[in-house]
Image (cartoon, rainbow, N blue to C red; front, side, top):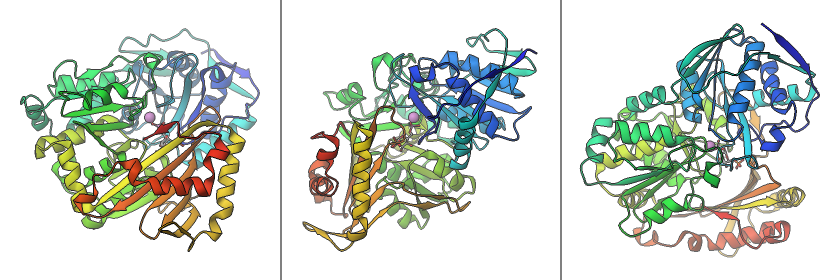
Length: 545
Ligand code: VG1
Ligand code: CO
């Protein structure tokens, strides 16, 4: 085998963020940039030689090039076997499923998730560990440390592998298997949900749905599951062919970027159910006819209805949500008498809770929901969960959510994003906020009194690791909340996220207010305390979800 050691110099910016290393494509195209990061992953691990690695991505521009490089580096670094998705395609949850099923030491997932793709768009590399989940902070820190001192990387000289044929080939001493990207994942879904019942419902003539894959990775998965296995009519999956630039769109399933689906569901003769997923298939948006389900409510509804679904019929051990996610699921947990954990933003923080069986369902306000079936959030899983509930309850999405509010009360919730803000100004805004925290408790803003104000810090209940500075929270005595944090997934300047939440108890007459109206007081308080306009130079958010 022809192994070369190529000498290289460190890049100073290879610190993984909320979900892997994300940069604009031209950054990754710099000589040795990708190689340095991949070698840093191998250098930070001790026990992978001879073992299995899972490899694939969301099909965006640079996916195939990166895969060929990583295969040759894996061979040079002594990986025993690499499982790579056909065409280089693996959704993030499917990769998680494969890592677990094949007892791989880990997986490399090539994606910048919901960020746009193409030559001018973003690319990303995520490393997942043997439990199938995103590398925890101690692993990503080790990778970053390795990247700062790297002097060379190993690669073999070999021709490219044909990624478009199911095959098993040798690359030096490493076996490379090009595998079906969908089958194992689809089987896992079928083991959790009542496919017979969903199929009957789907073909009953009483129900119509539309799924928008946004030209991202979920197309083939959604087609196999919804159309082939569950009998949805052909054409249910829209934009189902993964494209390198996602058709020029922004593969982020929210009211702004999934606008075609939103128009359909809010238009005349709308279907009963609509859903979309993001670039790498781990996010989901759920819509009913003329109705949007906030991700925080979606998590709460799934938790409250879990026993209707075969995979969860014995109930939930516990639930977990990221700190900025609304407390809707907390109320369900309280009623069920199970624990509810509040973690920092990012799926990696759910891993330990899922591994030791403290939590069964998890969710984030950013359109992410999942369970212990894998160690990633899972877009299609959430869609199937909803379909199973709809098939059993035979009610509309809106009726189910309204009933939920009647039982548990409604958490009005919204996130305001200010994108591409100057980094220094964003840092100044956060610093200014932090400097006010100590004096805030007891202070009143209009009708609201501050109960607590802090910078969220999390101690993992399983391994005791501490994560500080995870977002500024200002909580009021009536249960409402404002949260500020800076994004860890953006690639241009800084993105400020403002999360707003207020609670209306179980009086249905109070559940019809427009969300932004219901939150207007808190939007104003946020402006007063953080001086967002002054710091960002923007008079309104770029995206409201
Ligand atoms: C965002 C979301 C976070 C999510 C992360 C990765 O992070 O807020 O909830 O886990 O994206 O999602 P940030 O740091 O930009 O707020 V994905 O679909 O990119 O894997
Ligand atoms: Co994603």
